[in-house]
Picture 1 (cartoon, helix red, strand yellow):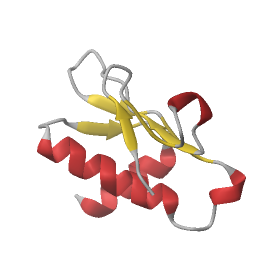
Picture 2 (picture 1 turned 180 degrees about the vertical axis):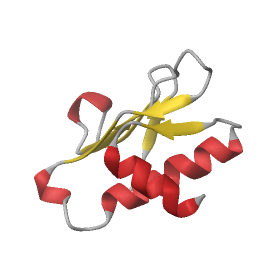
Picture 3 (picture 1 turned 60 degrees about the vertical axis):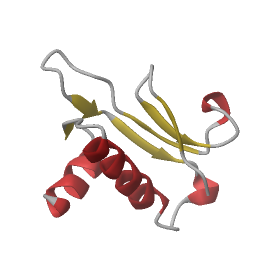
Picture 4 (picture 1 turned 90 degrees about the horizontal axis):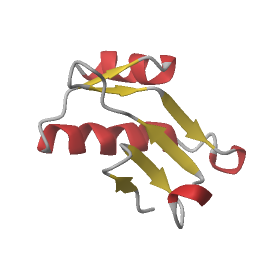
Length: 85
């Protein structure tokens, strides 16, 4: 499973391209200069396999390496982040 990031759109996805993503996380930059995770989505065929958590871990590591501060409005992402901080 290979995750890809569209850096211009602040979009992490799994799939052949971002338009055919089987799972994704949207994390646009906000006016404070941080990135807000607004949506975590996993298509039905991939649910129940821990994919959302794997994507969050990937994004979290990417953010640390690139000095990106993450926050969230998505309830899943808020909960996930509160458990790792």
